[in-house]
Image (cartoon, rainbow, N blue to C red; front, side, top):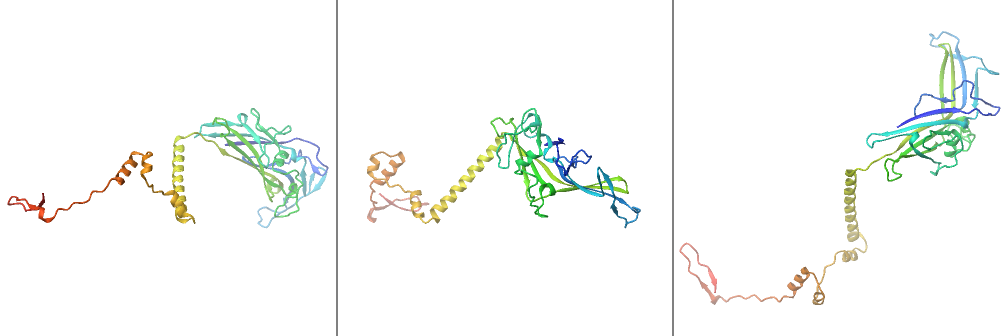
Length: 337
């Protein structure tokens, strides 16, 4: 699976205490990470310089006054204006060598799901998700709404400070792309779903150090913002007779085990076990009336054997015993005539 994230901000009219983003400060950080990125909401910039030799181990950086527009500060903090309309373009693809399926974002149908798993259908421009021939384009506010966040000025609830807003402290957002080819009888029909989940009670920041004049001058950019982690998952399969056979055999084995367990419980443990035994193990008793109304051949033989009168055993008296003469090498034995 692969994922390419392209981000940009559409300039709008930010509030007066917000600073526009066209000041040379990178809003997204880091820019080269493949499966995650940060959309900064609050940035603190500190300019420092060395007032001593960097070869001295006790030498430390100190603040330096720096001209920033109309501000003359050594350390200043500002909020990124209109970060809610930070725009993402997702170019994603999947490939499975064992199944033999390869798709990209332009050839996939998809759905955008909210926090309850329901499909979002009323997407406004420039948001586009799951349309064949188009890349997925999503604004940050759209992802936040899908995760159940209506406003970044809501209380964060993080463990460090419970009264900070999400715009101030930042948050972690999971963006999940899930693929499946079991939506229809055609296994070549692959679809996906796009959803967002917030990691509750979290905050996030990233600190970047930039040397403007190595090793004397350094600028530290401390960014708080929305950490977006993109996860590609799903299940793609194909028919396999061997797997089907193994599942059938396993099912039959489990059925046999279940039958044995139920029989043991029913006939040996349950309070009505003697009644169950009577219904489970029945000994047939045949009568002449049942025989006359028709039975199988085996039943006929059983009834005939039971109905046949027994012959009394006849024993000859000793007076009727005779001795048969034998050859010299044989012994004489009694014989009944």
